[in-house]
Amino acid sequence: MSDKRPVVIDLRFARESVVSALHSAFKDRPVIDMGDPTNADRDLSDAEFAVVWKPDPALFQRASGLQAIFSGGAGVDHILSAYELPDLPIVRFVDRSLTDRMSEWVVWQCLHHLRNGSAYAGQQRDRIWHEIADQPEARDVTVGVMGLGVLGADAVRKLKVMGFDVIGWSRRPKTIDGVETFDATSLDAFLGRADILVGLLPLTDDTRGIYDRALFSKLRPSGALGGPIFLNAGRGGSQKEVELIECLTDGTLKAASLDVFEKEPLAADSPLWSMPNVIVTPHAAAASDVRALFRHVEAQIARLEAGNPMEFVVDRTSGY
Ligand code: NDP
Ligand code: OXD
Image (cartoon, rainbow, N blue to C red; front, top):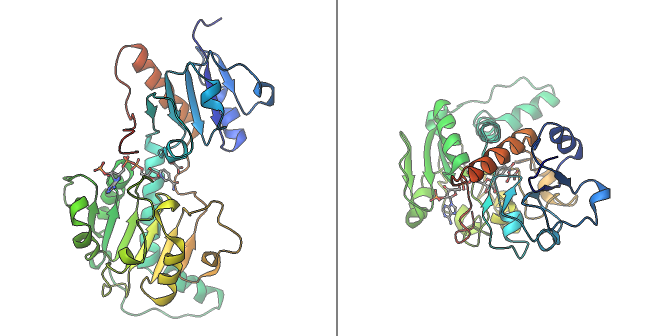
């Protein structure tokens, strides 16, 4: 019997993937799986660690002896903005597979818009054989990535490999080989250069509602794609959806690809579902691989137990 204190798991993910990943995780300590109804009223005061995604709001009061909280995803707004949190380290999820998946989504959507994906899909449906003239190359298009953290930095690298001209924006100044970067003080200069704007920002007090009409109006109107395009896979709370829809209707924006929404799931009556210039994916750009998540948590706990600092600890002041 292990003398270690339990880890409590409250992950509102697909249940089967959590159950299956738990078979091979946390072999050296007890696990309290809150997805198991028999644990509903269990005393959680002995739990030492919590791994959570949109957990029960009462969890942090019930688990009063925690040493650290692990987010089931890269983003931590799901707990920072929603709960009175104890003053504990919060560790976010950083993982190769999650990063690769996000870059796949970003590159996929940029190529979709570059290569007239929606127009050709429509032509195929109508059996129309017509080559769209004046196809620009990736090098003719500037992609501006907002957020140059783990995900943004990987995305810009892969967009460069595809040939796009890539620029990036982050809160603090950054140096990335072959990519012109802008910091928080030079947002307008950054926007004025971007033909495709990619949102990979965390949701914080500073980024809530940042994607609004005023911002979209500053994107380059005259680029090779015939109008600015907006991609968002960061957080929906960063976009003002009413203004986004207006901009997509009046031509301020030519098109958009959206993985995240102000309210999820996206309401069945949202106009975004049926706008011909909008691609909707259901917050599926980069799902967490639960096995990898548990390996990451085990690795961070091992660091803590060996007296080393944990990695990927969130800065509670900046909110990410
Ligand atoms: P990081 O914390 O590694 O990077 C965040 C980046 O955003 C940093 O470059 C940071 O700047 C920048 N940033 C934060 N606040 C501001 C601001 N006010 N002004 C300018 N730049 C700012 O996060 P990740 O790259 O790992 O993840 C980004 C987000 O992607 C997550 O928080 C999550 O919301 C979302 N996500 C979405 C998924 C999906 O499936 N749709 C999957 C996974 C994540 P600086 O470098 O100066 O600190
Ligand atoms: C995350 C997400 O933050 O999936 O990891 O949104």
